[in-house]
Amino acid sequence: MKRISLLLMMVGVCMMGYTMFTYVPQMFIGSSVNKSDIDKVMAEANNNTNVDKKILYPIRPKTGENVGELIIPKLNAILPIIEGTDPDELEKGVGHYAQSVLPGEKDNAVLSGHRDTVFRNVGKLEIGDQLVTKTSAGVFTYKIVKMWVVDEDDRTVIVSHKGKQILTLTTCYPFNFIGPAPQRYIIQSVLIGTK
Image (cartoon, rainbow, N blue to C red; front, side):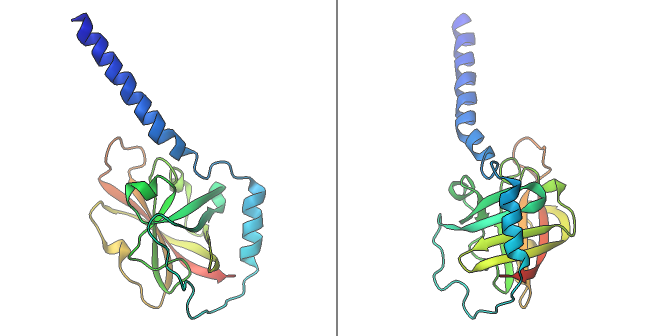
């Protein structure tokens, strides 16, 4: 009986170690951001020059490549945007849903992230707050216009919005749920400025 107890304790310690090894580094993505860095990006973004380029991204990113940054001024967060939404990409930052357009293009750009790592504080965002994406095509400022919760298998948030320039963020919900969450939290924003 003593051996079984010892074995179970060792298994528990190994599981905790594995969790710490994989989970903890993700918690620090974008967490060492100074307020001055956010202010600098926002100053750039507020010098709006609405340039309408024919092709914003002549070379499309490949899965796993860095697309740019998502800046959330209210949360003092600068997060890397990685092409793709598989676990490997979401470990590195915010994932860009590959079947959607890229930030700044006309239609619905969809970004996803884990609720307990890169998007752990998005519940603090409100309608009217700004989101900024900085990519090779420029700096795009969006204003949050809508937030809602959907079932985990609801794909209506990734549909096309032809003619509009929308940025949609998705993450699991409820935020404090343990295990695979049954719902998704959606934040939708519209483009208000381009540089």
